[in-house]
Image 1 (tube, rainbow, N blue to C red):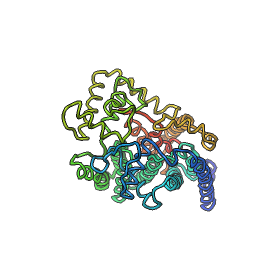
Image 2 (cartoon, rainbow, N blue to C red):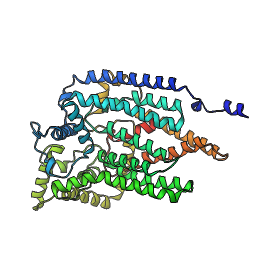
Image 3 (cartoon, rainbow, N blue to C red):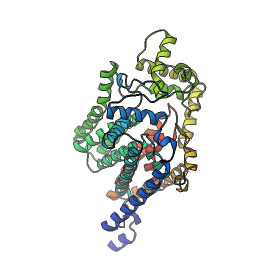
Image 4 (cartoon, one colour):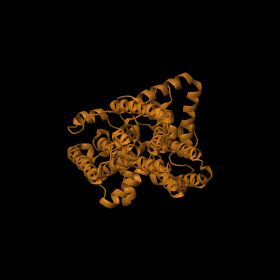
Amino acid sequence: MNSTRKRTQPAHDQPLSRTIELAILIAILLLGAGVRAVYLHEIAKAPWFAAPGFDALYHDYWASGLATGDWTVPRGYEDPHIRTTPYLRPPGYPYFLSLVYRIVSPGSLGPRVVQMLLGLVNCVLAFVLARRWGGQIVGLITAGLMAFYWVFVYFEGELLAPVLLVGLVLALLNVLSLWIDRITVTRAVAAGLLTGAAVLVRPNVLIFAPVALVWGLWLAVRRKHLRSAGAPLLSFVVAVILSVAPAAIRNYRASGEFVLITTNLGINLHIGNNARTDCVEPRVPELDRVAGVDGWTCFDYPRMVQRLEQELNRPMTHSEVSAYFAGKALRYIAGHPLRALALMGRKTLLFWGPMEISNNKVIHYEREHSAVLRNIPGNFAAALALALVGCAMFFVDWAGQRRRDPPAPARRRYHMTILMLLFVLSYFASYLPFFVAGRYRVAILPLLLL
């Protein structure tokens, strides 16, 4: 009986020695570091490396001001009034960048080196999650895919949030996966703090908080531990609230307005729901007219508020401006329900489509003109296709195991799979009301690769 079990044991459960496993993981990380070093050397010659634009410039200005106290506005731009208004963009990444600037001083090289090191940390976090899900071989393969997938390398070289968000999401899912064995107050608080931190980087993650709570309740019911899970799950909710609260408090102290995190919801909602939207390009003509410029950046937002005040002939707070644009978007949706559904369908196709939808920079051109990135195989279409096949195979296998008494590792894989799918689907759903860009889906790539 025992010999039969050993012969039929799945390949991913065959143990490597810890020494061999560690040696392979270190080799993957060293090779990944080599790829990043070559790419960093390549992009250091690009003009945008020392002179970022659009959102990257806004992040750099914000972080430099926080780190040095010098809020001198870049030449050609207007003062965005960051210190005296509610946050327009999520504060998580600029504050992370300011911490980097405090350590290595503001500049173009330091943050990229730190982000590429963080990218390697993300490989380890993905390895830990994948190893817990499917064993050593699955963990090592996932780490390898994380180390060499070109999108991760590309965004680690940009002053944008994906690399930080990926790390927080992987850390969060690692902690949540521990709930499968036991939900404790410590694990719940850690998950809540990580959720809040991810929300401060990308507010869309907030939609996952109640989903994670329901998943935890589902686990407690299945294990008949509902009563003992009450305090930990309540701790999770409190930790999420406490971790997001500093942003709301800062917004109120700076402006007298109650804004939970940012005031860009209304504009983003209007960008994705109007008569001329293509669900991709944020340069809506009406917004350009209000801003008084041909296209607009975050530096133009105060001017946009002033122009809107002139048009409506009344003073407006930033949150009122957000509500104004949100109202226009909601009225458009109510008046054109079929068009709104068609737009959601288009956003779905774009989000899951093969193209890397550009935002700030044309990503597929960046890859084509990079000797490093264009020689790294793989793309989103392949990752998605294989992920769908993997999910189908997993659930077919699970359906067969349910007829017997599945072992504890199989049940853990099932619960973790549900958790990861819930994150992917809720995160995707959070973008349907707005617009689509390639960088917005980077956070789900580790789970597709796994």
